[in-house]
Image (cartoon, rainbow, N blue to C red):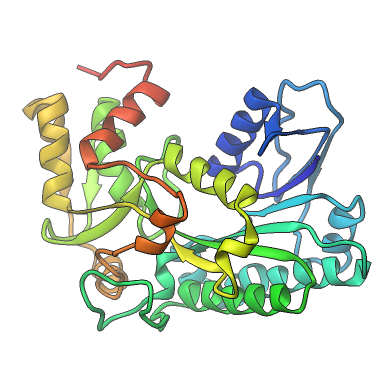
Length: 326
């Protein structure tokens, strides 16, 4: 099986790649070739199969065609400009998140009959916008209130239509906010959700730019990799024409996040969180969904953590070697 990962140098892409390298197979079929792409060069995994590495702007003319020329059996499309950056840079957000996605889809289409890969597209809960019911069910319409959410919603529609036309076998997964993200903060407006856990556990101060009452939908990096692997192998007949799914997760307030951290790590760690309101972040977050009834995805076998403490413990195990900074 030949697998192409766009966004392979990102956090989720790296973890997906590590899992594929560990397993050596996907859905019971051996991985025989990997093509890895990002705007910066991905690192080659420790595998004994051919690996192609490339770094470029995948939305540039000809790049998408080059990437699919090897006719990968499975395409993981993780490449995107994150929410805060897409809001701040209108042109860049649409060029990468919309134009790049359309060019990728059309590159698959240009190969023609006899080629129909499974294409897994990472969408986002940002496709929903206020006012919203709580929880949001599977039948609720997408009506984003950010440029990022709009770009992802259009990508979902394209994926459904290209799948209907037989161009590829697409599955779109609306990721919760992935928490706790390891590494340095990125430009995502949601980054503080991870920051208020990650930095205190590492002995550093974290800034909280929103109210403790903000409620949001989360899943761990572990869960995200599980979503991707399941989406790549699920029987398309079970999905029918509805190819975009809201992933399961955990709905908690910022206050509940902090209390979960307190129970695990104590008051001294929580004291490293500093409140510093940011009106721009508060405005963006106010339009985000807070909780979901992801019944359809759950019934189809997608799974996430049962509570936020489990999410924190997964971060401590996977990124901190089980240790918390004093």
